[in-house]
Image (tube, rainbow, N blue to C red; front, side, top):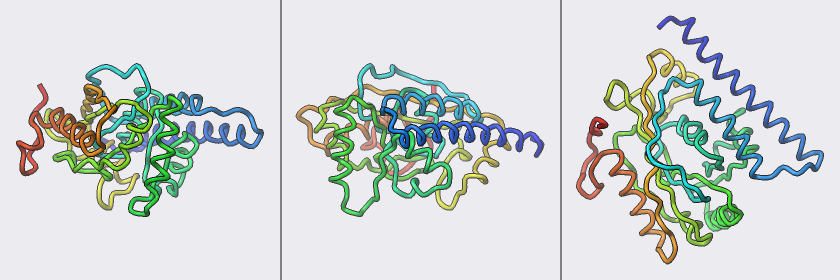
Amino acid sequence: MSRLRVYARIARVLLVVALGLGMACVFGLFERLGIANSTVRRQRWSRFFMARLSNALPFRVTVHGQLPQRPMLWVSNHVSWTDIPLLGMLAPLSFLSKVEVRTWPVAGWLAAKAGSLFIRRGSGDSQLIRKQMSRHLEQAHPLLMFPEGTTTDGRSLRTFHGRLLSAAIDADVALQPVAIRYLRQGEHDSLAPFIGDDDLLSHLMRLFSHDRSEVHIHLLQPIACHGQERAALAFQAQQAVHQALFGISAEQQPIPMRPAIAA
């Protein structure tokens, strides 16, 4: 693919980001003027932005399953920063992100204006975040988190941490497990993962230098939280996502394997 075409595709993404900046500026103006700026409105505008950003990315997306009809705590495996717009376009959502994202140029500001919650892992503030998450869910605002705590190359699934799943128990809402899988010509897509020392521009160049790849998003059976322990919830969610990604349970797979070709 020619360099000119790659740059044109990246320019399209940057135009969408400029749109997001404009929206975030409007939110900031509303805050300064004291105009009501509800989470519902933020989530709707965030979904609008995520849909435009997803359309600018080199993916063909297929969604399996049904969107939840009531607010839930969404839990998903995590492969790349692109998971966020691809999942965020499906429904009005807020995200739980690591605090480092808040300091990212442009992206951090957009995330904050969209109503994201931020956590500093290992800092001991999990109880505060849990209360914020519970309050968010109790107010009927859906929330999405990545319980692995980091991105992977998509070939395996890390342990789901259950500590913050207590928020769903406190708010008495169900979990919505989600499995997201990137494929290129029917095989694992090695270009999509955003891990290690990757930087955003290099990742975009890598993606746009190749043809579109496939993304399969599986909205799995919701898991009721009432009367459950957080460890049990984390285990159930991890097993469901693992089954959707690799076709077998985690207990049957002692070492990482190449995912099976989707039927």
